[in-house]
Length: 186
Image 1 (tube, helix red, strand yellow):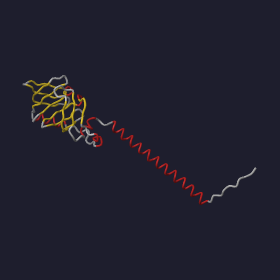
Image 2 (spheres, rainbow, N blue to C red):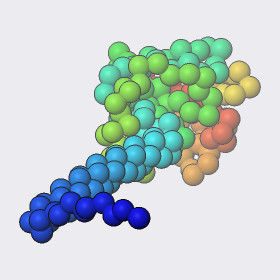
Image 3 (cartoon, rainbow, N blue to C red):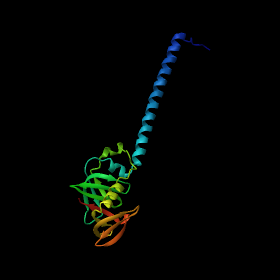
Image 4 (cartoon, one colour):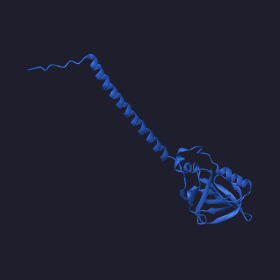
């Protein structure tokens, strides 16, 4: 049997080859690590966007919005957002304010697509403060209900899940869930 002569590799050359292999492996690991981190970040962003609530998107919109609601008298309300809570928002246009129950919203237009990146104070309920101010001033309001009826009178009380409206000396207790829209003018 014939043996082939082995090529002698100098130790410095072997070290250079080993260092080159380790460097290539390190660069591969670094690239793989970066790709894994980018995928992780992208997944995190998708997760966060999937859990953003409608009200967070609305409250962080700075331009006027158009809101279609299930209300024959006011099917479309357009204006600037003034106050928000989880269930309601106040839209203002030409000094008229509309408290809208989001449970009766059909669609919204004009919501800033970048609003999802500016979520701050998402749990702050500013509509309650606005309604309490209407009560303190015994404001005259028009209320549009889920059954299509409308009542106009003085707003005299605001509770956690109801409000009281005085219409021609008769007090009406209105559950918040039946309210579609409350309109207040100066």
